[in-house]
Length: 547
Image 1 (cartoon, helix red, strand yellow):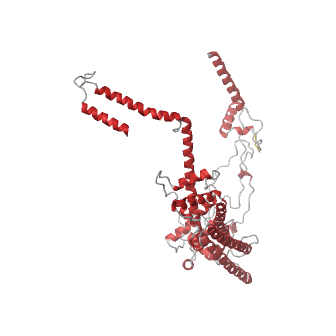
Image 2 (cartoon, rainbow, N blue to C red):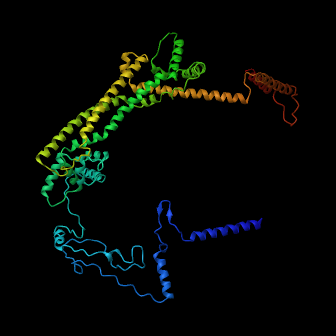
Image 3 (cartoon, rainbow, N blue to C red):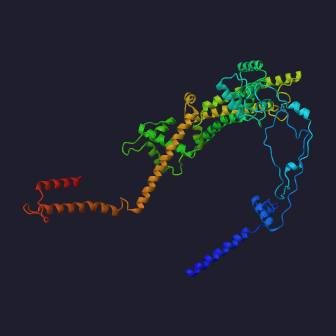
């Protein structure tokens, strides 16, 4: 056994050595799926340090290698070699001190990129004029002190605007995007941010006055943003119109989905056979208990079926309803899975749906008014040839602003459809309540969400009770298989014999104790027991057995 294990171990070591040796061999083809790395050569397996060591070793073995040729002179500009004039701005870069040749030939050559650059001839006078250092109260070159900025807003307001600006594009990009309603620059959240920081007339007056008093001082970021936004004509109308164009789909969905759930809920209830079985069973039980001949009852009473209990087993009335339905209608379902849309409709607020629909109509009308105002402003600008900042040729043919009239017409047609759907679904619900036996006066008072919630809660209680009954029957069926039932002959015989046998054993024990003399001690040397105590024990045992 040991020799075989040793042979196996030696084989594994040999195979590992062979695989590792093949792993260390250079790879012939460097391709990974569709990625081609075949241009990577073997020379690039070594790092710069390894290459330097190999060069040193070769130098020790062979004749000395001649020194490399000196690099070519760097291209000089007309001002190279001289000192930069102090009255121009300086670029604070990190200068490369030495540009020696590369230690070996690489794929990119043996010289740096700077050695191959062509000289560029500059107009030094123009550069000197453009980048001339102007005297001011602070040092521009050193940058140690920041220029004083004009700030007229409160600290809290300025802080809010500054935080908002961190999530928005640069202020100079806002006017073109707002004029053309470019969603690639500003999304829906950005529009909401702009509506929050929108400047007031008082703030614009304060900023303009401060700017006129300090024309050479720049504005703070918050003030500059508000001044830029203040130059956009009808800013509030543009943002509201833009937001409505983007929000219409979601606003329409908030109204249409609850109405669709309510429509499906009525269809599922009217088509549910279990719902009809429940109503018929509860009506029959109620007429028997009340001694009446009612033709129907209000469905709100379904929630109280779990509260009414019988006087014998204290089981709720809903339990007995489930038992009757399972006996008389075995094909009935759990009722809860049949009315999924009723549960969804119970979670909706249809009074809020009505309010949302009214607000949507109001916003649609206001959008037409805002569009008319913007069209007039744009036409007036074209007539006078005015081109304000960000407001010249911003409106392009493919932008949202150019398609806004067509979009609003589409929304108006969809709003007509939504109005008809809302009216017809609510009217169908009223007719459904009449179908369930409600009077016209009661129909006006019942809310759709309350009705659906009542039916949904009852269906959930019905399913829970039905599952409890089925589980109880399953347990009884399993216990019946393990042991004989109480009604079987064997169980009756055992039940009859066991008490009599127990009674005979107790009687024999008592008789033996009574026959024992009083003056004799027990086998263990103890004193005899008191006769009165024994009679008490006998009477107690007799009473227990009799009960």
